[in-house]
Image (cartoon, rainbow, N blue to C red; front, side, top):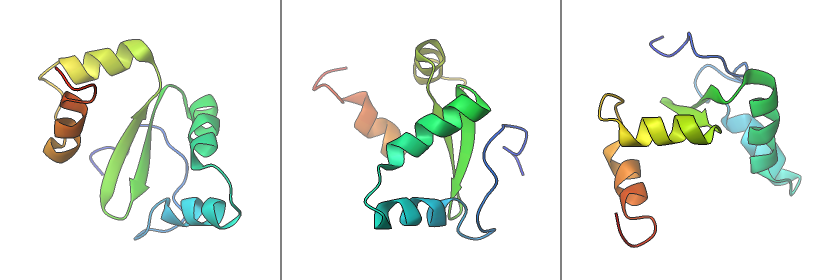
Length: 91
């Protein structure tokens, strides 16, 4: 409910979120990233997807990405952010 104000595609399932969409695409040997680009064209540069009980914000705008990653006011998942922190071998 906290992120429901952010636009995003309708969920396939209340419990599974958008997981069934990704499974269908992978079974047809499709590319999931094409779906992300399609949703970005429909819902804008920032949209929300749900996978199980996780909410993921997809950001496709370079300026917004920089603002979100560099600013401490936006909460970040520690596990994911730790991997991004040293993505290119250095900070």
